[in-house]
Length: 251
Image (tube, rainbow, N blue to C red; front, side, top):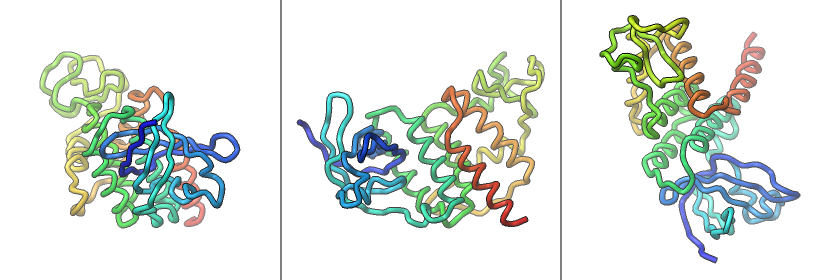
């Protein structure tokens, strides 16, 4: 059977059978790889340490008819700081889930891989909520899901703000078209999204945003992602649970 060696980050895993895992790896050369890690849940397995969420590693994979199999791994970075902080872990899970959901299998996306490495490095150093929000908008842009904020998706006219976000049509509707109760998008929201879109992860700059703009931008993003994926992200439940725990601890 054909084998290949690649550098990858583990972005999803679930238990399979008595001791195995089915994992989703994201590599620079091969894109998303769904593979079995046989025996990975056994403590003495050579795969046990590497088959953890966020782990950056070199892996040897055997191609299969339906699924590939991980045969060997050598850890490069476990991103322990992300794993040991519940808040970072929650938003890191969201970041990883977006990769697993938005990237098609076996389609190389080297830009996404390199950005993902930088984002995981910076996640424990900055506000995880802001890092995850910026990552999501950048992923939408890279993968071709970015909404139209310049032209009305109904009539095609250049938008004059405020406009209204249409999740179904993937963009904004002008005030002259029927927009019903769609959420409003003003200049501050558009400027904030543009700022998030152009963050340099190697040297991110400091910026501030009002609570109202942040919450509206998040709301639009999450509802739009649900529309794009035709399902809610599982990681959102984890984020809410962690937020509730932190709020109770601070009250």
